[in-house]
Image 1 (cartoon, rainbow, N blue to C red):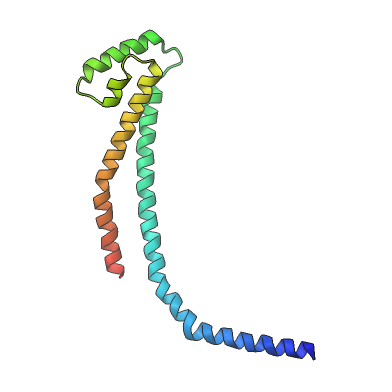
Image 2: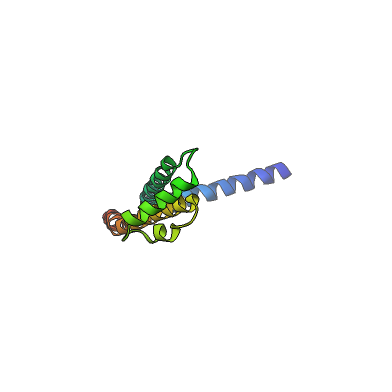
Amino acid sequence: MVDQAQFRIQEAMTALVDDLDKTYLRGMQNCSTPLTQAQSFVQNELSQFQERLQRCVMVCQDRVRDQVTADTSESQEQQRNSSLSIANAAGSVFRQAALGRDGVSVYKAEFEGCAMQCVDEHIQLMPSIKKRIAAVLAKKS
């Protein structure tokens, strides 16, 4: 008797879920497809932007790393600092602040200046990225 009751309730629930699925849920799936595609597109665009920024910063890191050698001495760093101040009198604030410090600070300042330039350049790209995303989303809506 319990088995029969359990079977009947399972059949009734299956019929209920099938009816709801056919009547409502399948239609809603089609409605969510454009939203899912739009979200995926936006996520992909933002991910590509972030990767470009990361690559730019990695180039900065590589440039600084290429300048550092195992036998770089403190006197070489001081000479480098002097030439930086002459060559970049109107240069980056980071380099100016690093003059007179140890060589590591100069390299850190160069990296930070380069990274800040990457950030500035990529901020300049944001309006065109927004325009491109908005154009695609407008077509899909």
